[in-house]
Length: 280
Image (cartoon, rainbow, N blue to C red; front, side, top):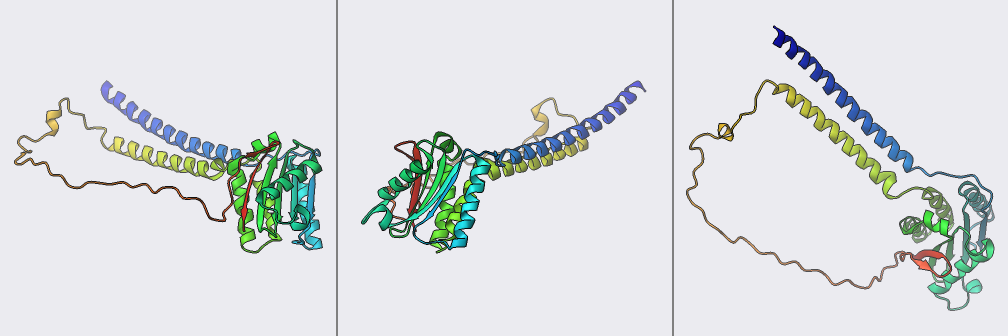
């Protein structure tokens, strides 16, 4: 009688323990998802040390669009304490027969003159004469905020607009994406969040399956010896042969020079700049 009471208490305890662990896993998964989501959100800071500069020498924007872009840039500078610059220029401003290096030097010099050398600035140059654009990041803090992975995200968004002929939309997209990626990790915001969600759901399913299986087989006992699982004379090996089936040959193509017009990768330039651009 005493042993039966003990077993009944053990059953109740196991049920309570199982319910506790299921709840713990579910709440832990929800906490992980919430934490990752918050880590992926941008953290704006109100400040007045940054400023904005817009110069549309190529006439890509109307007067109202220039005013709207200036307001968007000023709001970005106030919110994120990082200066922002948009310039459209061509042969008349940069020089006749200029090339991509001249474009890069032009926007770097423009950022240094307008905001001071070493200031935290993110800039976009659109050159309609060479059909080339360049995104430049200047300043130690700005380069930490916008590493190459984020710069590439911004460049891709701008390039897509330019290739579609949306020249007036490109600078607005630049400001929008600069704000979006200000303090957001490309690998954390979506990839890690869904990884945690998938892992949490999978963990809950496996745990539930384990508890159900354990409950159904709780009265069964594990055999002390392996012989209990093998039927006598159930396995007979009559013929054994070794056959060569197939061989594999792996070939690796020699890398070719990249001739596409896609945005060129970033990298550090002289004077505390980093950036990249491409043709459209």
